[in-house]
Image 1 (cartoon, rainbow, N blue to C red):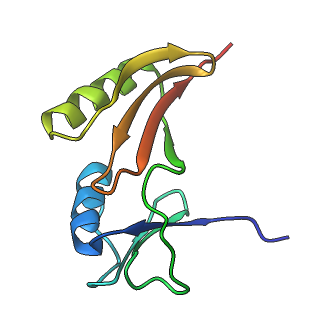
Image 2 (cartoon, rainbow, N blue to C red):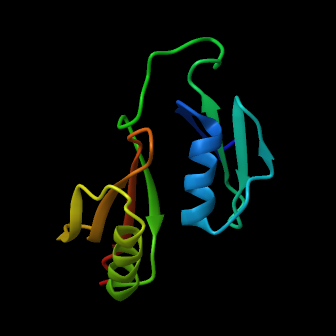
Length: 123
C-alpha cells in the first residue's frame, strides 16, 4: 500500500518560497525553477513548491487550508525556534501556547501557508 511521502504547496513564486524554506530548513532545494522547487528532507519526505499559476489542472487554492507540522524535542526548543523566526521577521499569528497536545506556535510562509512547530506533550 502506498503512503503519502510528498507534500506540494501551491505558491505565487517558487523562487521566493524556495528562499524562505531554504532559510527556515537550513537546506537547499534539489530543484529550483520559475515554476517549481523541490526539497528532499532528511526524514525522507519531499516538499514541492509549485507555481499556482502553472499547476495542472489549475486551481484557485491559496495558503491557509492546511498546516505543515514540525515536531520538536521539547518546549525549550520550540521557544528558541519561535525567537529565531521572530528575528527573521516571519509572521507569527500565534505565540507559543500550551495546548491539549503540547506546546505550539503558528507561523506563516510568504503565501500564507500555516507552519505549526509543536513540542508534543509526553505523559
